[in-house]
Length: 452
Image (cartoon, rainbow, N blue to C red; front, side, top):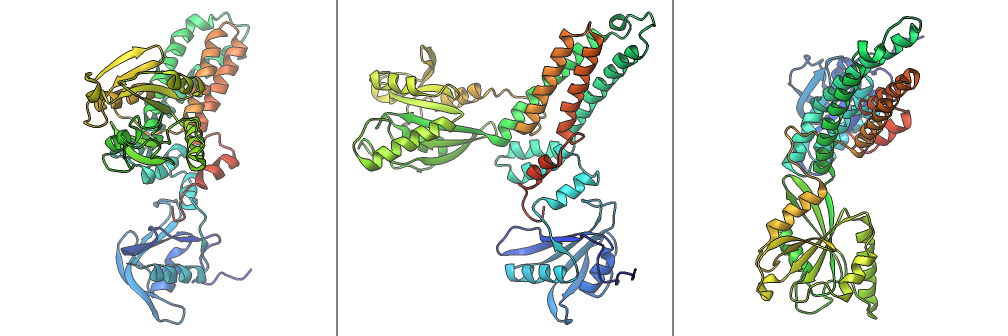
């Protein structure tokens, strides 16, 4: 077989623009594969020194200049992907970046798929699956708290907690299975191995990890909060107050809001997506009727529904009808608005319909009570060193908990006890990728941007 030309990279070298689309001072093209020192020499006329920023002229196939900038070469395995990696830093114009990427493709690279650089890092053992997911969580973080949580996960804090729990689980499994291997020995497994206490300590540690993971999921996904109620109860005013800007038109005319209006805010680092909806009432106005239908669709998807009522009138027949129609899944808060006009003071109280907050969207009285109630119904509790977790992680932790609880019930039936421990370890291993089917990997990395 003929030797590969020195300017041609090893098979399956990938390249992509790693910086965001558009104009910028600097743009980066990233390349990963094999024999990239020769690849860099063909592009720049010289082989760059490892792990040093080298000034270079990027050359087209005919020797003409494409751009000038910096080239960095990270030889395998000490690189992000575990392969040879090149980073080509040029001027950040879209045309320049495309020319530079096209030149890399001419030299034998192919265009990277979404998330392929990070997927290679996972497959080459540079990151586990939880750390790989934290890469996109860090990019997508919408609050500083979410970014800090994602960084903890990327640095391996979540994974270390999972690995420590797995090690204790494996140790208990080994003791149980060793006892099964020697059934004729007169050994009291429960007493000799302290199995009950070991299992209880496992369950306590798992509960702690689940609590931190739930808080991390809130930081990453936030809350979808729908403001609902009859027309002219102050939903748009409340949206503007919570978002801190004039997003919705506010007038004394009932039915002003005819479509959903969205606003964002954050409380304790948790991103909240507020939806102001059309007033819920029967109407013959076709446009308003469509708006009411959209309002109910938003309510179906909500994490929390804040039902606004006029504090001067309280909960009437119309509000009772709305409450009866609300789906069971979203948490609900009753907000008695316009207390400044009713001569009432802000407070939280418990009513038959649920928690109620007395507030004024007009002057801001009671808004902090509403913010705290949103945190409460979301289950937020201040936890030190929160790490960002995903719904996939919470499902795996819940499955692990279920198997450990089943093991507790079957501890006297040693074979069943050992099987539940095995299943618990499998569920736990899915978090870091020890047990991960290819279709799951495709789903996870397919959500990444190209170049990452």
